[in-house]
Length: 387
Ligand SMILES: Cc1cc2nc3c(=O)[nH]c(=O)nc-3n(C[C@H](O)[C@H](O)[C@H](O)COP(=O)(O)OP(=O)(O)OC[C@H]3O[C@@H](n4cnc5c(N)ncnc54)[C@H](O)[C@@H]3O)c2cc1C
Figure 1 (cartoon, helix red, strand yellow):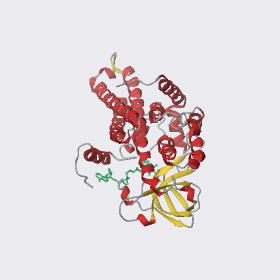
Figure 2 (spheres, protein in one colour):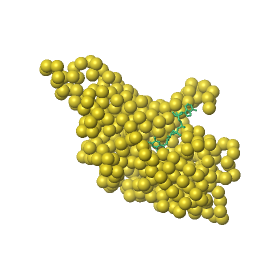
Figure 3 (tube, helix red, strand yellow):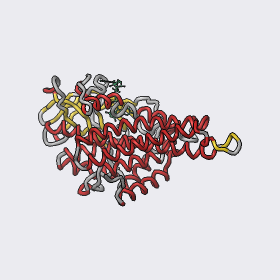
Figure 4 (cartoon, protein in one colour):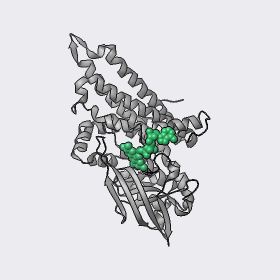
């Protein structure tokens, strides 16, 4: 058992931390309030190689694994810059294309994903299917060599920043019975693809969209992989990286909030010479949140290690547990930090209430806490499937 990062991973962590701190939460909030994107931070992270750490070197990446990408996600979040598109573009899209795309797709998309010049977002959720992916209704049908895609997607992050969206559909001849997914790389400016921005109560420079696909015509090579059989393994390939990196983002956000609050409570004195942090009613909730965040980090480390060793099934269990633990810990940490700061906790200046919406969403997306509990009950505890 080894809890240490390698010297290279240590260096990566320190370098990403330094980059994140140079931008900081003030930058993240200012961009969100102005309705702008964190383009400068994204581009710099891309130039420095942080967005491609998990992409194979032959396609311009760093040749590392999800452990490295989780470090990037956690450290940027710990600096107050939790970037959801890290989860979507390098974690999901790059993994799916690297592991299951054709050689031509790898060559076309991975170098841009690695240097950050290209973003590919991910669309699986549908209004009438929600957590039940077996009900996906976006249909792909053949028209000569082409594909025609029709359907609706909801809450799709980052469509306004991306060149492509990885759309999960089902083929027309498989509209009944078990889901046999097919994944398509769809240009965001494809004719027939319309989007509507959703008003979300999350302070973030990243936006969510409703997507309408109305006979979107795609060439044969938009299908991920050599054949329709690539769909299911390709979809599963994205799930573990998604859960592990979103968990890392949650853990980083939790660390950020606890750090902000601890600095404040250690120095604020309103009862004579003692700091408010000397009162256990203030310090214990922060300490409790710190324990929860650290426990989540341990499970993230385990899940990422298993994943990078190719132990996908075990990584699936640990990844789901890590996502659950980090989602809960992040929400607890931010709420506790707000309370410890008193009125200051609700100001923009102190930069913790600004994260309330994001951490609350982290208990719902990309997979809800209930669906993780269903998974654990079924696959760890051996219970019958309840749905
Ligand atoms: C900020 C944000 C960003 C997102 N980004 C993306 C994105 O980029 N791409 C994308 O495809 N999707 C995205 N999503 C969608 C997200 O993955 C879904 O919201 C999530 O999977 C839940 O689906 P739903 O909203 O349809 O809820 P529903 O499935 O309708 O569930 C509603 C509630 O019922 C519970 N529930 C449902 N079924 C069961 C059951 N069998 N047992 C117990 N409880 C159950 C759920 O846990 C939830 O609490 C995003 C969502 C948010 C909030």
